[in-house]
Amino acid sequence: MSCDRVGNLLLTKFSTKGASDLCIQVPATIVFWLLKHLPVNRDPSLAPPPAPPAITQQDWDNPYTPRAEYVMCKELPGAIRMHFALNSKEDLTLVLDRANVELLRQVMTMYSKDLIDLDAQ
Image (tube, rainbow, N blue to C red; front, side):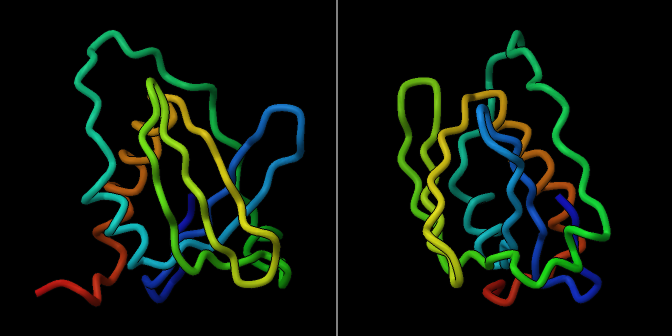
């Protein structure tokens, strides 16, 4: 993940099995919603996932990177299914295992101080 300069979105790059990496722009409102709803890992023996793909300037400059409009999540045994509605491509559905969910949560937490929470009260 990488935060834009304004603080209103994260560029998120997912590495998938059997396919190429893919990027989406995730608005800060979705990031803060996910931080409120993603479960926190409570298993100290959880193995870390493989290293995530690197985000480059080319990823930021790509005019075809879709933006997430909203996300729907469903908790599964040992995983979470995330369905992103995208503005310019087919919707994206990901199934993240517990290790990847925890990594996603930790990285979003790290970037949350750089993002603007417009819904904060």
